[in-house]
Image (cartoon, rainbow, N blue to C red; front, side, top):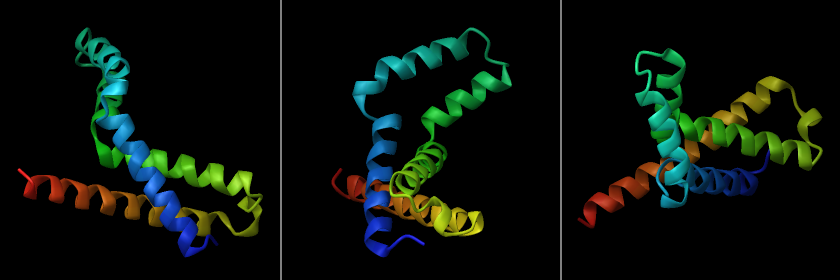
Length: 113
């Protein structure tokens, strides 16, 4: 099981990586390619799912948090230390904490307007 400090670091990394993937201008060209691809066949479920994924901080954050957690567990050699169910719960914890950071950021951004 991961420690609380590791959970917090992974959540912060998940939050920042999600912001990068969904909102930051550096990835605008990549997102534009996907939006253009979708606009050529708007009734495609695969294309619609791709657009939803890259537009939704909760959807993207879930997968990014899972990738970060898996990378952390594999690099530190801790993947085999606990059953998959425990790692699934850790995934929920990391993703949930990252979403909480996202909600705080959204709320503070609205207060400043």
